[in-house]
Amino acid sequence: MRLTVDYDLCTGHGRCYMLYPDLYDADDSGDAVVLLPIVPTDREQEALESVDCCPEGAIVVELDPPAAEPPHEAGGDAAVAAPAFAKPT
Ligand code: SF4
Image (cartoon, rainbow, N blue to C red; front, top):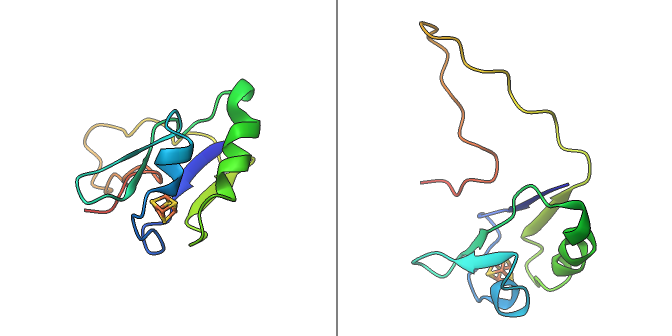
């Protein structure tokens, strides 16, 4: 299970990190930061419950995330994509 925040929807009012401080923290602007982007099995129920705490619908759970990208080969010219759970800069 993968846990992410949609930063197009997050308004940074902080319900997630107040109610689930083991799963979320705040960045400098108050937006949520996911602390466990790959959720351990014993925390999945809590992660699912946390989705409902966000009135903006900004918390996203992927039950079956795609496998990790293969290692980038040296010398290639393909851009390396940021992890899906990283906040855009
Ligand atoms: S509850 Fe939702 S909108 Fe509020 S900080 Fe958390 S993810 Fe962002």
